[in-house]
Length: 152
Image (cartoon, rainbow, N blue to C red; front, top):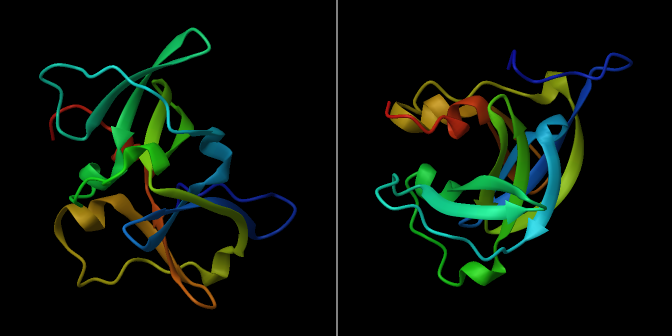
């Protein structure tokens, strides 16, 4: 949880949430530049399966990662219903393709818990924290790990 940036005036942090395969996920809202509906993209030959392609964002070419595939899930059936989270990454802007956008949630940091020790493998590498909400479990993703596109 050390990568989560806290508001200095309180012990709350904001997360931009989204849905993947009926599960609620979130990322640090400070890293999200904007949210866009489905964008026509250009495929990248020989790219890993989770690299969906490239989009032109106001003259800047941005790589789109399919978060479903990155997390080992089946691809989205009707991709035109998905959305792009434009992320400010260390390497520049990147897009993360998700099923549906949720809300921005303001959560107290003491409600965040580490992922259970029984979660292993790749999944544990991508999960930064979890938070039990009233009706859902929010899974906070580690964007730094998610956005790494080189071979692991």
